[in-house]
Image 1 (cartoon, each protein chain N blue to C red):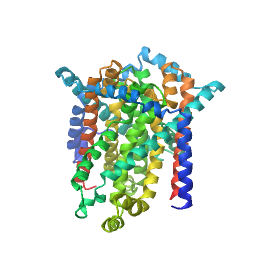
Image 2: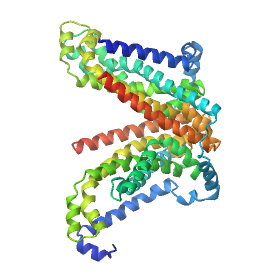
Image 3: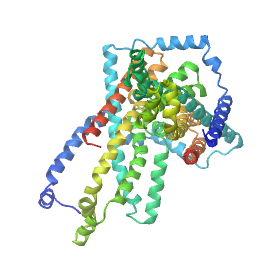
Length: 278
Length: 253
């Protein structure tokens, strides 16, 4: 269907403003195109197209030699182990910080308490710390740790522990705040300590949600640990990066398939676990 | 604690222990005085961040480049996603529907960084590779969301137009699109927010923006420049977070 502009305007009274808006948007797009060096022609440049074509052509058949499969199997286990230890370490960072940052568990908001100024002062740096931990993406932490502790799994575990520690800490605090505070308050008012109030007043209600979220985060950690491998933090991603750098398409294809299967598996496992624990 | 919980905790502890020993993590090595001292010196070398004039200009350009990569990639993905969403919503027969869904799933499940590494081969180092990589992954995500929106939108307006003799394309533009457009725009804006964060780190494999600056300055051991880049990334993330929270509050969502 082709219509000239006046004919279109006759049928659709909003056509002209819409066209004007579209033209304006295109105008605003121009600097963006310049900044991103947008030029689809480079894709067809032989200097790019030939190696890319060769790389893609090698995808089939995938590399299935026993020694390569063994290597990939080991890397897969390493990825799973990084995600597991990383999430556990993140929990160890997040749990205490979440207790410190939760305002509804504060003694001073209930009544006269000793040292309440000190506790309030403690809360702000703890919150700031959580923001810093999760504000810097895990890939950046991984890059920094690879420089500090060398290539390999340790950098991945530390990066996951820090970023996911920040995220879990924030979410745990939100879970405490949103669950009923009555039981904890009653305990605090009856003279229980903060830790007692947490363990007997807050955790029993908050635990299922916390566990479910932590399991979900483990699933994300599997994906993240593959990605962090690209900057040298061990596991499947590091293998993939090596294969890609050598333009070994067959190896890259095998690793990509294993990665997709791994993500599906982690997904299913996490859903199963959450249903079982619910 | 119920028995299920105790079993779960024991199994978990065993898994974590097994994982740590598989990785041969050496906690005493990491937390030894010597290692901590070296680590402390490494951290100190990042301060103070480089705030010299020429570098700040480069940083600003890098930030703009990151924003441009994310915006353009999201726009391309919204267009591409809509194109694939039409067959994926079953408008061109069952065969096209399954083919389109398979394509969307494949695009969605390959992470941006993997696409970026591939696109650096296909388009050379630089922001264009990052834009293409982000656009490919986001097309998968948005295409699926758009297809769901198309499936759930009422058919009556378009059918009324068709019965009144309107061509199919016009019936789509005036009968279907106005219903799904607000939802599609909301999804695209939400993905843009995620893509800004992603665009900041895609550069680690050579795909432009702040990430590439960080990678280069760390590789050249210019830690003070690196910390300035990290601060810029953090600022971008926080500003985007706050802006989106503000918009959401305004819109009463």
